[in-house]
Length: 399
Image (cartoon, rainbow, N blue to C red; front, top):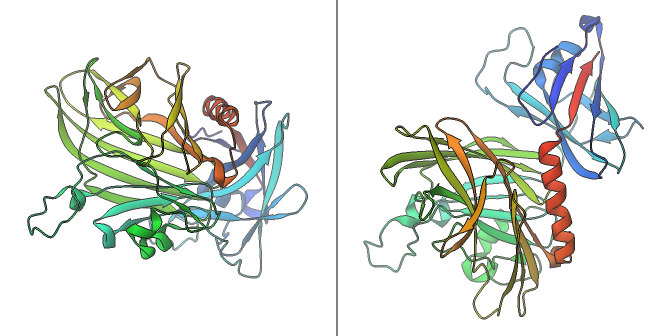
């Protein structure tokens, strides 16, 4: 039996794995709530044990009714030599299943195929955007985001009117379509994607705030936040799950030098991204970290009205606007010890130790996208995310 520190625990049953041409995956769920678009992650090493010699381009993943499911295999070592054909370059197999309310178990098969399986349509995507002052953008089929690199923070030394913004806050791009828009919107340009021309718009305000999910060190009175991200790394890039990391250079937090690596896991069909922030510092055994939501997130002249919710492990907003619809934002932080605020942000706080990741979830939804229509529906989404965070799925793999 093997146990993995993953959103889904995976076990390998014994048996004649060497002769197997079909692997069976059983996933169990201990929540009574419906769980739409859950990503199931299986280490490729377990697939290879149950299905030796399987190739990622010649497999089919099927549900219990025989339906072929979209799948993805992450690549963790693209230059690795693999003379034994065991898939040493591969990380995890991803596919999705929507659990109905009360559905406690689902079964799937992974089968070898003679023909090549063509790629599936991408529902998640991320990339570095050098054509726009080194932004980094990401999205799934519900919502998009971006954040800012060092070029945006650099002074306008040439006097050409370059925008200057120093922030590690996170932006939201609200989309009303399920296909990828990051490339298209950057191609359209600033003056177009700030207006809804049929696909949605950038109407969220970040400024000096934490935006929707930025972090900082909280000393009980003041928030000490880092600057724009310094470097990036993409670890997986769709179609079902995108994973990337942003590195933040060290900053002073009331005398402590702190740096951060922020890992984003973006899944198809979800309103929330999974975040793992690892802070590195010396001196104190622990620091308190706050995750924030901007108190003034709307565009100008929108006469925004904001309902704020604070329930101990989550902070939420439901924002109504004069002409641009309503939207929700949220932070779910299972290890939270306090909810507070500063002049710019709603904040939720948890202790961290140096080198140990802090997991939290950032969410956003626009009523015109159709996934959430009301404040009550947004609260239900937040409650579901809170439940999912503390009730991971469990899976077994057998030949």
